[in-house]
Image: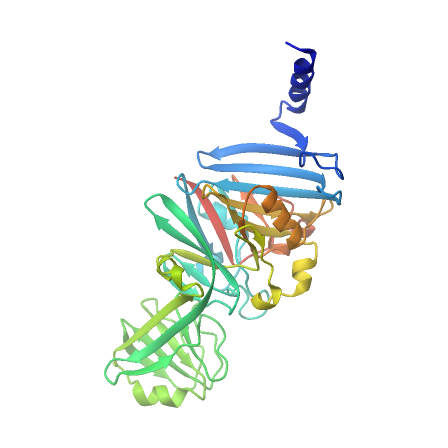
Length: 391
């Protein structure tokens, strides 16, 4: 053995501590940063690996620090589920509470949502849970979908639009739906499902059609806030749209409601139709290895893209693994802008990634414990969480 070999061997031994931590240079060959990353890795189960990464500076010498948490998920060896806070479209719940309630191995926050007012907790964008569309997408905004296959889940990134209608089968009259499970505005017909809330929470002045078993059970022309039946739904029309519905629908009238999410990339439509779960996201961070930060198209302010905030995001590896990450914004971590986040994904060999709800929502839970540091050390109630389970 040469002296050089023993020198290198000794250095490697010293780098690995008894706690399982490994200190390595952040990027080999870098000139601006010599401080090593501190990495701790743990296999939570066959198919779910948890990693913590503490970084003092970037490859270009930019000073941190950053605290990053990662979940690498092999979708052939783990199960995934998207759930709503309190199991309804309104209301919020902490990620830890949802994780505990469903006995998940790990969990993190998911899509955007309304944070104030009567409709607090309503998804701000697409939401599909167990194959049922519960909220329509925002125009131009990215979404993440999960398709269950014989080999586990496959993830889709894309942009969607909503298409829906209600049709009177007797008279073949069709009316377009404006949205699902959200406030009703002028010149709109909104579909309210049992997953929304106990009532529609609408103001008086419109027309509401209560439907059970695909037949009109009752019509409320002026009251508003109708009770949503467990075995049906409510169609709520604004004052401008109400008279037309009253003309074509009467009690006991059969009707049909159709809803679908249309992919901007039509070649993916068949896959999106098969999705079991969809959540809102945005903006897209990487597409096929290129930075893809189009704030105006996705209606995301430049300040949220360029500012340093706590982040939650998802990427897809070449092997088809899902990489979920959180970046803290705390006393020991300064957060990231989305260009920094794109660079981090590229550094790890990931070419496709998308941003999720971040800031005060950013939370990761492992084995029932919050493992990141939430903003202001407060666990925020969120609209949805991604739950991970052993296969």
